[in-house]
Picture (cartoon, rainbow, N blue to C red):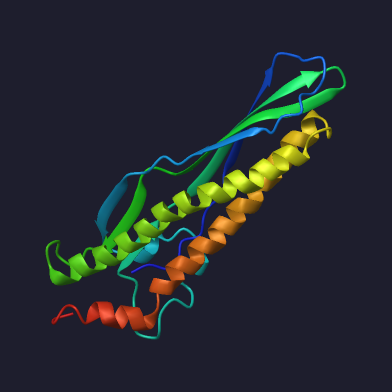
Length: 207
């Protein structure tokens, strides 16, 4: 069972310019967000803790005597492209295309002391798949938040100049990624409690 996995931020920017216009058009920039899914790779490993991404993932997660028998590792990423109109003395964003995805695959680790097909293995795996669902649902929920915040930044960038407009969009993406990370942490934490672990463990009579 896993500690909340926080989003690892990686933003990539690709720029393009549409044909020059005589004056900046006063139109709302188009913002699109795509959310491709990632596959899931389940591995049985000797020491689950060896696959944690950050040191804090093993701190304060369990009461004394508990061990980590399952772990889910996912790295959300945001990459975007912008297109703009560039005329004499003006630059206006026309489109922002953002992709919110994960490093593929999402990794799920289960302690290999539990035999596949056993109650313990199945119970740990089911818990980890809840974490996978949190990641997947989270990216769909936050797609709308990205549209709103990035759209606001794009509209507000009119008249700021090319570099400032692109920097404004980049900062907006970073801000929402931080929100996304915090929201994921809260959702994972809601199922990663000692009380929930006890309930989960009680499903198998010979744990």
